[in-house]
Image 1 (cartoon, rainbow, N blue to C red):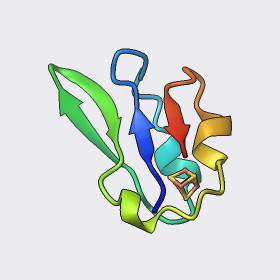
Image 2 (image 1 turned 60 degrees about the horizontal axis):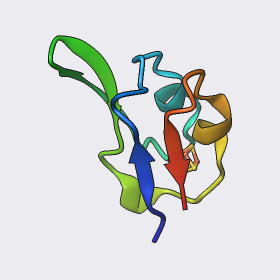
Image 3 (image 1 turned 120 degrees about the vertical axis):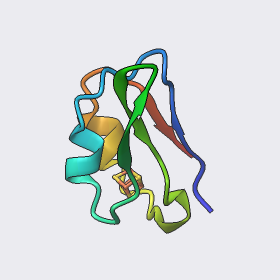
Image 4 (image 1 turned 60 degrees about the vertical axis):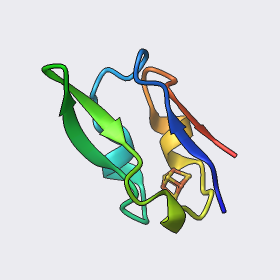
Length: 63
Ligand code: SF4
């Protein structure tokens, strides 16, 4: 199973991951008053790397 990690310190809440993910892995949530990506359905990840390549903050790693 893929290990999907969002570095919340880097995440700027752009939401690109949630838009490009073909498996709908991400939810955008409010954490400390800021929008952040959460890999809620990481178990569905097919390791396509679209989120890693699309994230403008380089906040995502998938292994
Ligand atoms: S690697 Fe692909 S399937 Fe996995 S979370 Fe990122 S965009 Fe979604």
